[in-house]
Length: 482
Image (cartoon, rainbow, N blue to C red; front, side, top):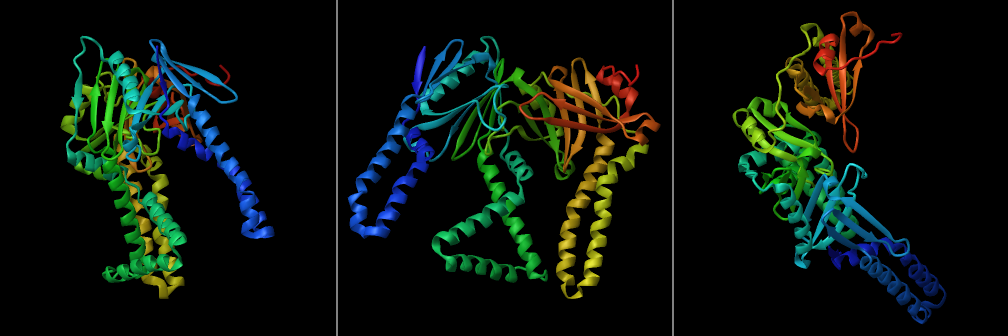
C-alpha cells in the first residue's frame, strides 16, 4: 500500500471555498469606518486578522485530510474535515485515468489527476486531485503497466502536423471566440476604465472601415468579428492537440497531447462505447476523416483532447483504425433509404433555404435605405442554411445500418456533420423504431439508437424499411394487441 497526499498548492485552491467568511471583516470595516473612521477600524483589526487566519486554517486542515492510497485492488480516497469519508474505486472499474499538466502549476511541480467510472457524475470527475507530479505519474504508469500485456506488441500512432491543423479547423467555433473577445474587452474596460474600452472599439471600427472593400461597414464588422473568433478557437485547438500521440496496449489506449498544458489519458478499451468517424462537407470534399471515441471520462472537460485520429485520408483511415482499435470495424450498409424518402431528408433544410431569401427580399422592400446591410446579412444567414441542405443531400445518399456479428455500423447526419458510428451491440441501451402516419403507409420508419453512457447519446437513422431494419438489428417487436 502506498499513500499519497495532495499537493500543498491545494491549500490555495481551497481558500476560495471559504471566501464567504470575508463578509465578516468587510462588514465590520465598513461599519467601523463609517462610525469612527480609521481609528475605529484599527481598534478592531484583530478581528479581521482572526477571520483571515481561520480561513487559512480551514483550507490547511481540508488539504491535510485529503489522501489517496494505491492498493493492488484499486484506489482509496480519504477526505473530510468534520464529516470524514473514505471512498473505494476498484482498479478495473476506472474507465479513464487522466493527468493534466497546467502551465501555471508546472513551476510548483503540481498536476491534476482525474479518474472516471460509469457510476459517476457526467458533468465532473469521480476523483479529481492536485498531486505532486511524481506521485500522479506513478499512479498513471501503474495503470499503464497493468493494461500493457506481457506479450502484447504495443502500437503507436502520431499524425502529421497538417492533420492536427485540419482537426483544429473542424472543431473551431466562431461563436465561442466572439464570446471570449467581447467578454475580454468588456472586463478589461471595467478594470482599466471606460476610455480604454472605447479606444479598443474605436480601433476596431476604424479597422473594419479600412478593410470593408465595398461591404457595408456594419456587415464587415460582423464578418471580421466572426473571423477573429474562429481564429481564436482554431489556435486554442491547435495548441491543445499539438504533439498528439495515441498508443495501444493490450487493454487500454494511452493518448497524449498539448504544448503549454500537456495532457495524458489512459482509456480502457472495453470501456469504449462506440467509435465515431466524422466528416463535415469540407472534409468530405477533401477526402478527410476524423475519428472520435466515446468513453466515460474521455473528452469530458472543456479543454480535453477529444479525438483518436485527428484527420486521415480514406486510404490510411482503416489502417490507422485497425492499428489502434481492431475490435471496431465498419460494415457496409445492409438497409438504406429508398429514393421516395428524399423529401423526408430535405424537409428541415429546404424551408430555411426558401424562407431566408424571402425574408431578406421583404426586408429590403420595407427598408430600402438599409438594403446593402440587409442583403449582406441575408447572404450570411443563407450560407449555413444551404450548407445544412448539402449535408442532408449527402446524408440521403450515405445513411443506413449494417451489422456484422455483434457490432452495428450506423451512418447518419447530425447538425452539420456526417457520422459513421461503430457500436458493439452490448453498448446499446435502447432501440426505438418510430413511424409517422405517412411512414406506416409504405412500411418505413426512423431508427433511434441510444447508447450506454454517462449522458443520453442518440443516433438517428431516417426513413428506412421497417422489416429490413428489424432483420438487420436482429430484434423483435410486439405490435399493440399481440
